[in-house]
Structure formats: structure tokens, C-alpha cells
Amino acid sequence: MSLKVIIFSRVSTLAQDYQRQTAELLEYADKMGYSVEKVFEEKISGAKKNEERKELMAMMSYIKKNHIEKVLTWELSRIGRNAIQVLQVIEMLNEAKISLYIKNYNLETLNPNGTVNPLSQFMVQILNSVNEMERQTIVQRLRSGYSAARSKGVRVGRKTGVQVKSDDQFLKENKEVAKLLKQGFSVRKVMKLTDRSSGTVQKVKKLIAN
Image 1: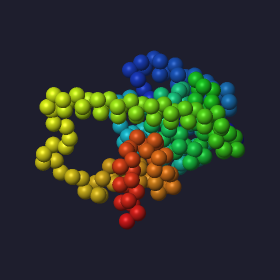
Image 2: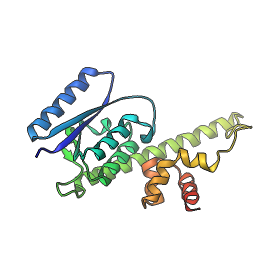
Image 3: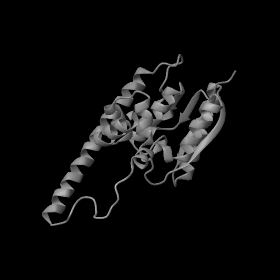
């Protein structure tokens, strides 16, 4: 019986390049004897959380309902626009025991027996490190920007009259954080996977414990 797989691509303005990559993935699937059940195409747009990416959520729902065993993609950038999104998608697929095949690395995230591929785990650790460096750089730039603004007499902080969010609204906006915490991930791990601050994650943890 053929292995049931799907192809996931993020479509750029270079349609011809996308078609070539999809064609090569279809060729690879044919060579391996896989049965391609569906091709998901996500149009590249502005910054969105994974749970707001309709095509990604549709893919996750589809693979669970249709017993898909593997996801094929051209490169990691097709899975997410940054390291955070890529890590989240890999975590979701690992939990579902679905391997991700990355064509340009010729790499599988899971072994045939469903265990994590050590090489892919190493890759994920590198992504984590890169993500942390990116986050620290952004934090440093923000601090420098705030300092420069204050030195020029610009007021920094919440504007007068801005309402404080209710607990329900706060949890709704951070539902991915709550989900990961309920699954047993540590605060530090959740911070890395969602790019939320320690204060945000700790607040969510406190709210869901009540």
C-alpha cells in the first residue's frame, strides 16, 4: 500500500519557481512510490501567527482526518516565515507522528519507526539558537529606540485612555501559549516556540491554573 503524503508550499510572486518546486516534489513522490493526496498552497502575506494561517490549519486538519503519513516541502522557508513558525509546525507534526521531508536538505524529521531523527533534532536546536539571537537583537533594538526617544522628549509607553485587556481576551490572544502549557511544555520552551515574553507566558500559566 502506497504511503499517503501531501505537499505544502508557500506561494511567492515567482509562480514559475513555485511550479518547478512542486513539480520536483511530485516527481520525488512518484519515484518513492508515494500517493500524493493533496497539494496545499499558502500565499505569502504579512506577519501572522500559525493559528491564523488558514491554509496551515486546513493542512493540519486534513492530515489528521485522512491518515496522512508524511508532508513534503521544498525548504524550511515554505513551512514558515521565520524560525518560530517553523519550530511550531515541526512540533505539531512530531506530536501527530507525521514526518516532514525537506527536499533541499534531503532530510526527514522522523525515522521510519516514528522516533525523532537526531539530525533533524540538531537542526531544530540550531533554529532555536538562531531564534533566540534574533529575539535578543530585536529586544536590544527596541531598548535603544526607547532610550533615543526618551532623550528627545518623546513619551514611551501605553497611551492615556487605552483600556487594559480582560483576562478572557488576553487568553484568547494567547491561546497557543495556553495550549502548549497544558501539554506540559516548560515556560522557557513555550517562550521560544511562541516568541512571547516571560511575563506573558507566566500570566497565561497563572490564569489557566485558576
